[in-house]
Image (cartoon, rainbow, N blue to C red):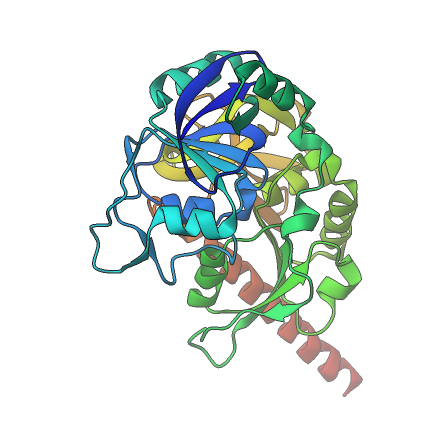
Length: 377
């Protein structure tokens, strides 16, 4: 069936509908990765967005059991150039069309995604609406959508209760990590376990006192959807965690929340960073890391107090901040996704750094306990 993606600016692109035969809309963004559509569709950070894939062929390797980043499909809709209806991978269990239909997510194929991407680069991300019939009606539908920053998307994707994440840390004394779930990816949790952590996942509404209770030795601030400026309650929680001196590690939205808790601002990028091929420089080593990214907001360098935090990573595409660390080293964060799902694994060392921080603090506490015991004799 012929359908359209109508942008709030009045620009309309035509295509053919597949997936669920429904109308819907959201913020239109483009993703430049060549593979990984299954992980992207199940990444909670894409909640409420219409994802345009710049790779020409989508769907050719199907959907694989175990490769989901969460239990649901999160984008509002999908746009592709060439949808491949046949699957050519031995692990494929479902087609992309089947999964989208089951999740009631519409998609549009045969769209000139090169022209659409170029338009978004020139005019910035904007709201769009997919549907059939009169394009002018669809443009008005796009204009009537709530801006993505006006919706608390985190509350829609976070865990409903505290849940231990399964897996063997491979050690008798794993570091105990509490994850503040703003829309965390399964691959991040799996990487924490692989590095030697026992992981408990908490809803985003959890307060600092509960996160710190029990065996917690470090807190991870997860990725997630939406505008960090619209989440003052989470910023307040991070401030309390900073005051407690617990090791903190944040990724993507977690990076932005940490920055705001340190007094910095966040601003919207013109068209965001979405892809598995973004070069970032580690300022301490000079090394360039190819990274996976998915964010629409950034931390302006001039808003960060150098007496409080230092910049650790920079984007080589637009010089935006891609990492920071507190002065004294108790907390750090990166804007990109070092877990590499999908994408390169250049930055996995960041997880090991978190483990080293927690073990160092454990050793300090042990020495302090020994000194106190000796003093009381």
